[in-house]
Image (cartoon, rainbow, N blue to C red; front, side):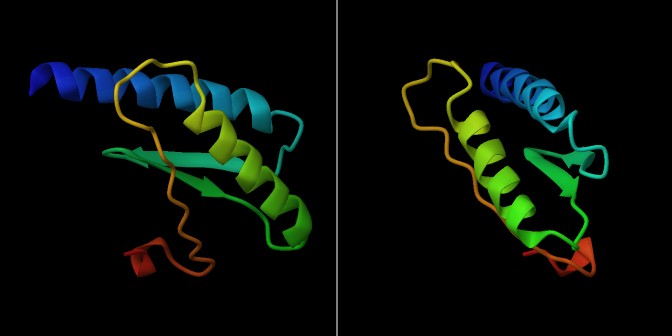
Length: 88
């Protein structure tokens, strides 16, 4: 179990760096925190077209980070504009 958790933590760290670098040109789009195996973002709601594009780009970055594992890495997206506690 330690090997699996350590690998998952390593993959999450790589994803955080990749996402942060991708969002640098968008100063109002933030990574807020991580919880277990989730990354929480905060995007402003005034440009939903841009947000949708960035969401898809971030998903693609995270799913193809160059980590070789025998199972697919898939990214799920939840949108909760008012309150993170409404998630799940």
